[in-house]
Image 1 (tube, rainbow, N blue to C red):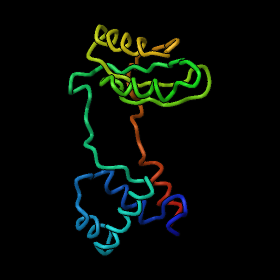
Image 2 (cartoon, rainbow, N blue to C red; image 1 turned 135 degrees about the vertical axis):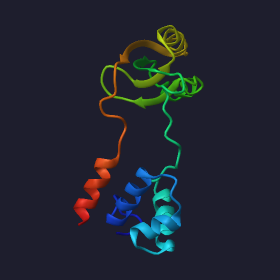
Image 3 (cartoon, rainbow, N blue to C red; image 1 turned 45 degrees about the vertical axis):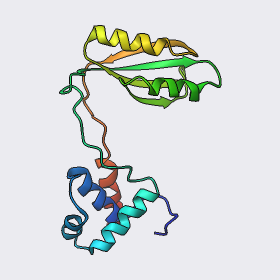
Length: 162
């Protein structure tokens, strides 16, 4: 695999699986568990970082435990050509966790959190009042049967390499 080639190889996948399971592991411990030199692990991590595959080591935070037990998704229809401006304004709302540009009925898909229904109304009001937002449709998440994950993709990369 060359520096420019897309995807990951078996060692990359095994390293990412290890860090997915135990993000606090140091380079030396990763090298010990993977059976490769410390410099190899560091070089792989540096390359994955440069390529944008490895984007950081944020802690996993349970928003419900922080008091934000309600998750909602809003589809926003916005004024044509104003996606960047709307995204900038949405970024200023702390309860907005993610924004995705989409195709189909709406222009943006927004994941937001709130403490309860009244708090969600406050957050929705802030979103609706963003300049250039024309229409919204909001759905409340009742549960999360499949949380955000990358493990199956990493496991497939290991299987395909082996």
